[in-house]
Image (cartoon, rainbow, N blue to C red; front, side, top):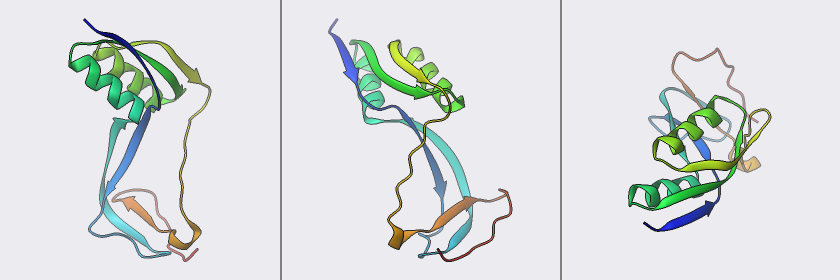
Length: 117
């Protein structure tokens, strides 16, 4: 059985299904919300493990529900997570170019005012 270590990212994708892409400064409501495990490193580790390799993951997760779910998913695929650090708090990154700010929110979510940014 091949043995390998994967060094890379682990993240949870937060996805809102929308009828269309929001225009600049617009909020589109009514989309369905879902989460998906991911990250280039985690995806590679899972693929290798499912193909029969003995895999150890090296990376970091936030100390939140997303981090716990990601770690559990890796362990269910028999991936060694001893080298995955847990960072206090929630790890989050969003990148929006200033000329393209727009929002989608799932239906039933908190009341939001729409405004141009």
